[in-house]
Image 1 (tube, helix red, strand yellow):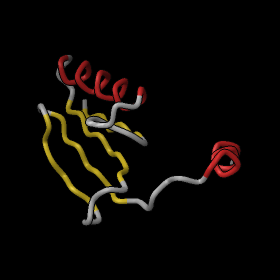
Image 2 (image 1 turned 90 degrees about the vertical axis):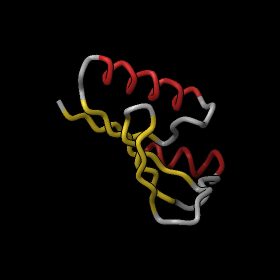
Image 3 (image 1 turned 180 degrees about the vertical axis):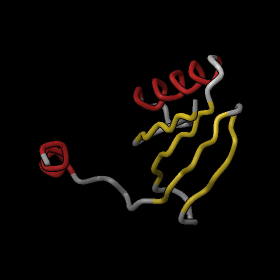
Length: 79
């Protein structure tokens, strides 16, 4: 089965969500699935990168810096 996982953060980020998504991707891969991660980064100069990391396809899309404070985060989560 082909699986695509969408995540705000992914390895090498040390945030807990990034680690959980990596573990999930590795487990799906070990069960024989094709896994693609689509994640967002703010520290690259190109619009997107596409690479294979440990058998997992990782697409990183450039987005602006996501520092919008508590009120902005509340609004983003609420809507």
